[in-house]
Length: 92
Image (cartoon, rainbow, N blue to C red; front, side):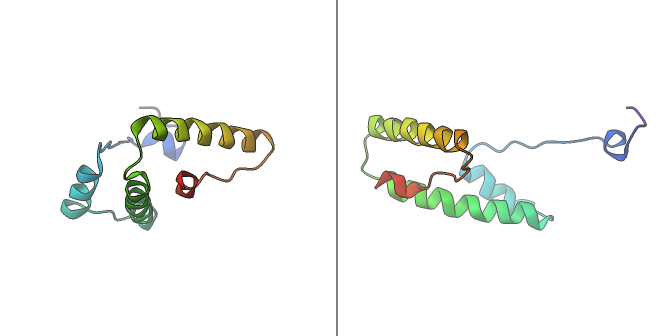
């Protein structure tokens, strides 16, 4: 490891948790020290719950079509300098 800047001198680790159940298990067993990551966890849980409620009863093909529409809308907004993320209300 090089002895350049502070960031270069420290080892970096990454944890990937697949699935909401594994994320909740991590939170319950280990938790987050950094408030930034605790906040991200909380926002994700609310987002996931909202998403699941909004797609209930919608066919997988329609969900895919909506995702394509949302991506096109997002890319068009970015091209025009607007960076709002699409909301789950788009499903309604």
